[in-house]
Length: 465
Image (cartoon, rainbow, N blue to C red; front, side):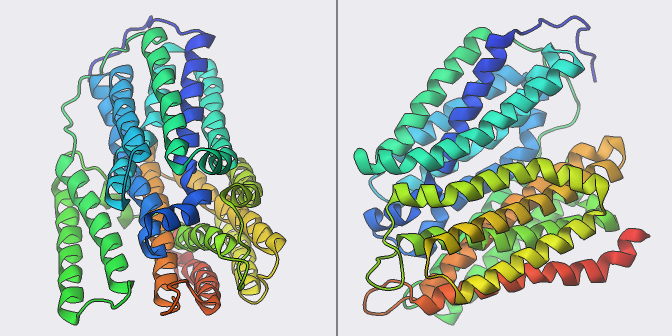
């Protein structure tokens, strides 16, 4: 691997500001779907299970882009790759803003999902052009603005969708992304690529994408009205199993795998992945179920909340999630990560079981989102921080990438499970989910969260070893 020039071109505050504005626009574009999901389902005439795919396709793309974005930036230059990825994101945002139906919107979301790669590429750029201390400050600014963007999207997607149309809630952030990308391309100097003999694991990327998409689509088809005949269900299971097996086969033999599965042989790594998956699956169910209950007609047991109101109700939870990311690292340093997970699990499970019987007021749902978001964020961040410091320095990138991918897959699976439960419990006359479906969903989410206690108990000895 060749060395980078010892005197790279320095970047100023304007360049860092441009990266921050780009992160803000991306965070906004990423978050507009959550509060608007009930509206999108009504406008497109789709079921909750199909609606869950709208957010999940973006997450799936993000899961497969995250491990390779840094490699692409190192190989071809961070600025060059960032600009091209933003072109894909912009195309996806414009496609989503013009989408006449669900398939086109899903394609737009798939393209938008590569936005996840913007963060590691931004980190590459600031590290190449700034000192270590300055890089830490710049990275903090970019991450903070990306998080702030998610709150902006949650707040303003409603007014935009209701004042103009839901198409504009994709179009306006996309325009901001295009403008910020042009400024970054103008201000940011080119960074030299790092030549490496390691290739990009494209077969692994394709197989993981196919596995996740086949599983999500299969879950929707199995739980929709009328279901599927046993033969079709079996065929879907065979396809998913074949893709997953092929991915594992490729990853174990790739010279530079997308995800180094050999890391899972280490007890600490395996334990962290399992706990992260369980926690985020439970939280993904909450993320999906709460907006659905807020948006249901007030004539029954719902609240008839508008997209704007849903965004306001969910905002405290988004703030709690952002705060938890910083608290999780501190908690991991002061307490054992398993202790943090246990406390978070108890809070989450108790909250969801209580929510199953008490969901007649908006504040109850909003408080549940705050508690579960904070608990999930603290737990997963503590696991991420402890794992990053437990492995060898050369394995830090592999370990953290594996946990990030696990986190994204868990949230996506949880949302899809929530949609499947609502579809299965839909009223045959109205097509709307019955109250019992939400009760079932909250109970299942609580039980899934409680599995963390069992995982901690079973793996405790292995981790200590």
